[in-house]
Amino acid sequence: MTCKLEAMFKMRRDFIDRLESEIPGSYPNVPVDISTKSGQKLCRELALKGVEEMFEALQHLKNWKDHKLTEVPDVDGEEYLEEIVDAFNYFFSLIIASGFTHEDLYNAYIKKDQKIHERLTNKYWGKKWHSNAWWKSREPIIIR
Image 1 (cartoon, one colour):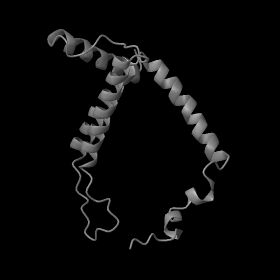
Image 2 (image 1 turned 180 degrees about the vertical axis):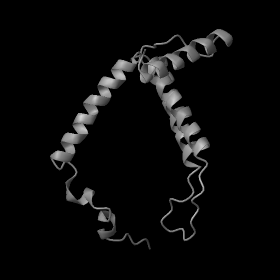
Image 3 (image 1 turned 90 degrees about the horizontal axis):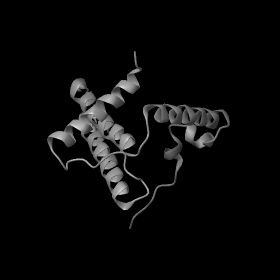
Image 4 (image 1 turned 30 degrees about the vertical axis):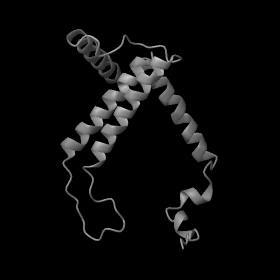
């Protein structure tokens, strides 16, 4: 039995291979050389498509504006999650196209998790950042 992350990577790789098989020229041979212009252009394109999908997910959230007096708590959770999955698919494609594996992602995740916990332990961000109201204490900007 493979881990779920490995299975997700395999599903995405299988999709990439199928897409290229059924629509020749739709996808470059991956992994690409990320030091080349064409490799970097592909990585940039995949990353931006993932970001675009995250923006589509955020369109389902209507209740986040502090200045809005009405409450709009209705969220289609299934569509919201589907857009996030779309974003992850592009991000998985980016990782695969860059030549990294599910193990590389997991190890990088563990390393970063340790780093952010160390930052909290060492008060990396300082007191201002720990207060939700830090920005309210700033002087207003007056435009004339």
